[in-house]
Each structure stands twice: as C-alpha cells, then as structure tokens.
Length: 131
Image 1: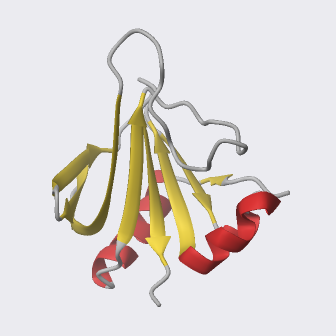
Image 2: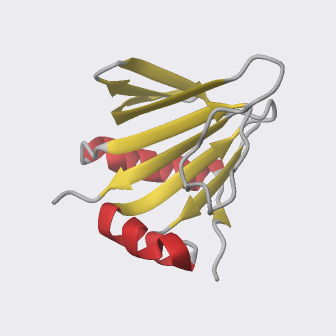
C-alpha cells in the first residue's frame, strides 16, 4: 500500500494555483485537534471526546486568492484563510488510498492535499471528481 507523499510548499502552491485557475471544486474537511480514526469507523473526521477545545468543519470551496502569506478559499458558508507557514503538507492520489476505501476515493476524488499544523490542526482538501 502506498502512503501519502510529503511535498514542498512550492509544490503545494503550484497545485493550489492550478485549482484556482481551473476553478476546481474542493471538499475541505478539517479538525482541531486532529485525530485520524481507524478505518473501521470511517475515513471522515469525527469530533473528539475529552476535555479541551475542539472543532470540526466541512464545506465545498474554491481557491480565491494565493498570496505569499496565505491561501484564501471561498465557500457557501464563508471564507477560509490559511497561513501556510510551519506546516507539513502531504499529497495523495486516490489509487494510493487504503484498499478498503480505494474504490470510493477513485470514483469521487482526483487528489487529496493534507495540511497539518504544529498545534494539531489538520485541513484535508479533496479535489472533487466532476460527474
């Protein structure tokens, strides 16, 4: 099984620029603090049980603006602005997904860009396959 590949900020910006130029619809799923649940429960992110502040969000967005300091996405529920300094970025294509979810991933998405921040926040951007 293939793993997601860590990519540079430069490569991530190039992909985001492509999505912006093509007005690509992107499903974003985010959580803080991030905890990936076992596949038996779901590939999606879920609320964490326990003490402390936690949050989750989902929406379909498009890249609106890319500057040196941040990326701005626009969606029907409002804008999302991310400062991409000091983060880890992974890229994955659906054919690299775990076998138990690969068929669904291939039918619904073209790629996934995952952005992980040091404070345990994660933003997963899925390039949606248009039907």
